[in-house]
Amino acid sequence: MRVAVYGSLAYDRILNFRGLFADHIIPGKTHQLNVSFFAPVMKESYGGTAGNVAYSLSLLGMEPVILSRAGNDFAQYRAWLTTNGIGTNTIEVDEEVRTAFATILTDERDNQIAAFYPGATEKPYVLPQQEPADITLSIVGPGNPSDMKEFPEYFRGKHIPFIYDPAQQIPTLSGDDLKNGIRGSRALISNDYELALIMEKTGWSEKDILKETDMVVTTLGGEGSNIQTPDGSLTIPPGKPKEVKDPTGAGDAYRAGFMFGLLQEWPLPTVGRFAGIIACYTVETYGTQTHTFTVDEVQSRYRENFNEDLPT
Image: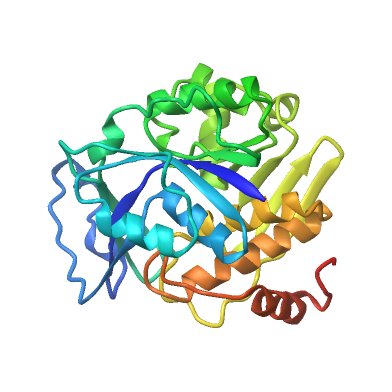
């Protein structure tokens, strides 16, 4: 099955601080903040929301197609995507600028400070006049704000089901923009803080949101997730990682697992638990496209975590 993934492509630099940010920030002095965090561990990897989601989808045997923009340093990343069976013909390359990159610093409580250079994603993506063939599901992730206004309407017009995931771009988008993205979506997915911000900006309650989308999926980090539908709320327990090295990209891996589960037409509790298992794999490695797994390994871990088999 082919899926379309809209979002950013970026080179990631992941650093770890052996301490807590809060111990080095003086209350009442944030108006003149000047701090430096020593980070002896650094990992460079391929990233961006579109690349991360597509990578985990490819490990699950899907055929993801990326709708995004990259820069004049994209050749190495393109080769990586192609090697992993990810379509790149729909990626626009801007030879005048670099590909986006993110520098992400994580402390010992998984708090993060990030800096993001938009590069090629600063310009909007040119919507294809003819959609990629045989797309069964799509996702609108964080990217260029103009694109995030256009793609929900585009997918609605093409009758392609889509998941809406505004994430880091919520502060940039207006309340009306967010309403437009939610309207007609298969799911709105966010973490609990992002959901609160969405409700504040739109003026919608969770009940109001559920009039516009099939479900509200809220990730809760190590606490699992929650799936709210018009029929009620489902509390989804977390998967158990074997170790936690770096939480960066866990949300993107969860989204890939969730999309896969929806396409299998599994019951929603199974979809949520499966997505949590996929997220475990990326927190066990530094970086966002550094984890690997086979479908058999995922099935075994699902059984170990939840004492049941995945549907066949």
